[in-house]
Structure formats: C-alpha cells, structure tokens
Image 1 (cartoon, protein in one colour):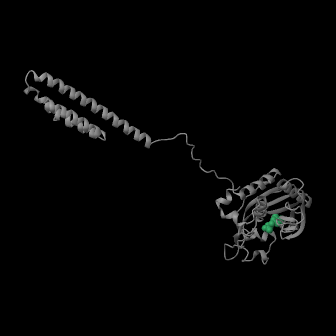
Image 2: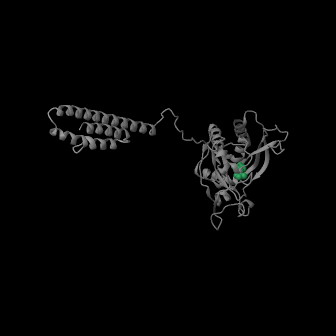
Image 3: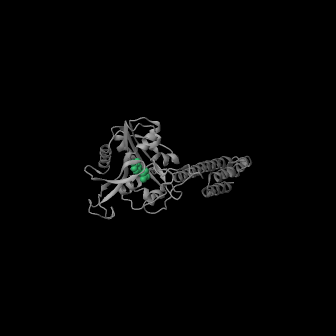
Length: 341
Ligand code: DAH
C-alpha cells in the first residue's frame, strides 16, 4: 500500500505538470481525489489493514492527499495567471498613441476667390442676389437688349433646354440685373455671383461652365464717375492700394457706353511678360452704364434714375490670384491640386 501511495503521488504530480489548461487540472483532480479516484480507492482499503499499519498508512495517505491538493491549487493558479497574461498581451490598448485625426477639408480655390469678391463688395454696401442657372432666353438676352438674330444667341454658343430656344442655361449672370430691377425699386446696389454656361471646348483657358459675379447699381444721378470710383476701389482692395487700372471703350448690348477694365500687370508693371502675354495689362471685367432701354424695360424711369453694371470672370481672377496656369485643374478636383490651397 505504501508503494501504491507513493506511485499515486508521483504520477499525479507529473500529470499535473504536464497539464496545459485548467480543464486538464480538473481531470487530474477527479482521477485521483474524486469519489472514484485512485487515492479514494486506497483510503477505502484502510479497514483491511492491521492495527499497527493503519495509523502509519493513514498518515502517509493524508500527506499524499495534502500534497496533491496543494499541487492542484498551485498548477491551477499558474495556468490562470498564464491565461490572464496572454489576454492582457493580446488586448493591449496603448492610450499614449496619438489619436487618428480625421482629415479636415478646406475651401476650394474658387470658393476662396468668390468669398473674397463678396467680402469686398459687401464692405462697399452691396447686397447679394441669387437667381436661377436655368434661365428664360428673354431674361438672358431679350431684356438685355440682345434681340433675336444676335450672334450670342446662336445654338452653337448656348445650351438651350427647349426646341423653341425659350429656356437655356444662362450664358452670363447679367439676367440677374433684370430680375433684381423687376423686383426692387432703386436705390439698387447688388452683386450676383454664380455659374454660367457656354458651348466652349475644354482647354487650358476655356470651360463650358464657369463663374461670374454681376454687379448693378441704380440710383438718382449715377454717372460713369461712380462706375470708375467703385471699380477702382474694388481693384485696390483686391490687388493692393495704388494698383493702376485702364478703362477701354468696348461694346455690350445692355450698356451704353460700355468699357472693359484692365489692371496693370503685377508681373512686369506694364513692360510685358508671360503673365500678361506681353500686353502689359490684364483684362479684369466688362462694365458700362445701364442702357436706357434695359432700365425702362424693367419699369424704371430713365428721367430720374441711371445706373452702372459690371461682370467679372471669377476663374480668370482666381487663376491669377493663385498662379494657376490651367483652368482644367480648377474643376478636376484632384486632391493633390486642391490640397495646396
Ligand atoms: N455679361 C458680360 C459677359 O458675359 C459681362 C458684362 C459686361 C457684364 C458688361 C456687365 C456689363 O454687367 O456691364 O461677357
């Protein structure tokens, strides 16, 4: 019996050491200490021993049981610790790693340029008017003194929406002049920024869609001097004090007289360079005194009121402002380009 007890101790301990998980540990416990376990079986045989042997074997059996119980508990806690360790390692959360910042967007260069223009005119007391991009031909052309037969009205130049050419994608923001004059009574002082459309092939300086900012002032006693003063003030705010302008006679159907306004080239100061294509001047906008026919067509008494209007091409301005050499870049929305602004 003594040998048997010794064997049980040795085998149980070695099985415990080999146990790789807590389930195996439990298996060892049942195998030796369980109701039908090996040690239990030995203890049941105690009665068959002689009076001298029984206390000796009893003590040994107790020792073995205690040793086994202790070894079981030790292995169990060892395995639990290992398990915890493994879980901690796999679930590590390093709170010192900097968070992932969601990339923040910013304004498109066209929006920057438009906002700049709006700010300048708002500062001069202009209000902002908004109107449709799908426009009536009567507003886009006829009421702007551009009668049928005018070359600008040709199908090849304009995106008509209807067979009868009565509805189109506006080719200019100038129809906003009509909309505002029909709705408001002077004094009027508005700008109307927005998209316009023309049947142009895409290249480095042309796009079938681009932006204009229309301006309109109607009041008593408005003269060409107001036009020049306002636009000079605008140019100085845009390009800096003392920026030289040039007012060239031109023709627009809805203004009389009409002009185009150039600024002295910032690249060469007038000598001629790549930026101004050797002109020395850069064309900035079209303008003029609102034609009396246009005023009276909107119910405004030309004996009392007069006005001036202007139209700015925003892309050209933005290209110069940001030194962009190809108009297509503005609309392709390539992040490598846009991220530079
Ligand atoms: N609408 C003209 C264009 O697209 C620009 C323009 C010229 C607007 C003169 C005006 C103006 O208001 O007075 O070419």
